[in-house]
Image 1: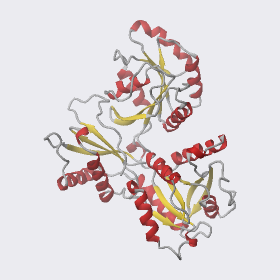
Image 2 (image 1 turned 135 degrees about the vertical axis):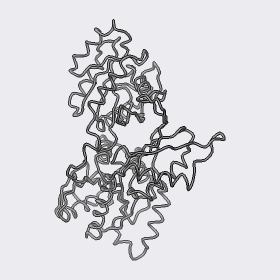
Image 3 (image 1 turned 135 degrees about the horizontal axis):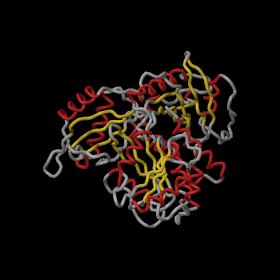
Image 4 (image 1 turned 180 degrees about the horizontal axis):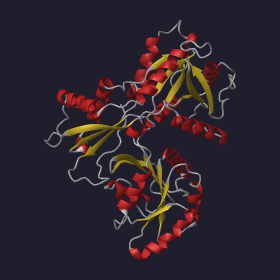
Length: 453
């Protein structure tokens, strides 16, 4: 269970970015009266009472983007809703209900997580009866005004009450079934590999690239443990996506990565690494998914190329993912397949590990003593302490006096220390830096999520 995500959605120009900035206590999202300014999702760490969450701002639903990006904006919104633990459906009290509000409400009708209707621009008590119109959507209604700073703590309390159980409360439950996404460009032997796992002809195996058009779940057992293998369509470069079928195949494959606990990224031992492979690797990294680089069809190359050459090739190509393990298999015969799955299970367990705060802070103290943060404007930034706030991926918050003064290379150094000294050696780690205040108010955060190294 990763850090809970609180996702802000709504039609264009209802004040979603204003709500986002208001809750985190700083101006991060762009606020502009022009519809459609926010396109990509923007996320930030937010502390609500005793819990940390990730607050996510999204583009306006239903916008006709002037740069022809409507499709991408809608996809970003869909991804945010899929990952949400609580949804804030923002509406505009002064504008009353519009057809686009109705459309957003329709899209949220089947959401499986709590949805709060946030009536923004309720600037005074006289406007609250007008806000009551939004009870029509059958959601908990919270009138607020980001501009006038009204209703903030009512909203934070409502979010807090609807968060999923904290990590401590969820401990002790039975280990879930591991979901493994098998991805890669076309014709790398993914479906043959799944057939070998299931010991049955479950997928259509063909030498024609692109045979698998949809993601398919196949359940199987290994040494008495259940797994789910998610077979996906082969990825293609965006310029090569010529048909709706190809577009939706790639979209479903990305969704499979988001659903997975561990991703097996397949390469054909006979082929060079392509731009598609690099784009796919970037997507896996952006989702913080444990990954194994799988060099398939190795039986065709083992006699003419040493494994070390392919290892060096992969490490040189994907320098920021140096921690990812590499497996050489023959999916058709099953050679090394069991060892691969056992390693995937180990990554799954790593991603779910939690270390005690005392152990984490001893590691941080030793790292600081060995290599202090560099000077910033003639002063050395201070890191006070750290805590792990979530798993899948392991998520660490560092409390310090000036987050912005700690450069990216030093953050990567700390991530490297965590992988060396903590049980997270081969999985992505999320790192946040938070400014410590004695008189902290919920939401006053001064750091963004950092990419893994």
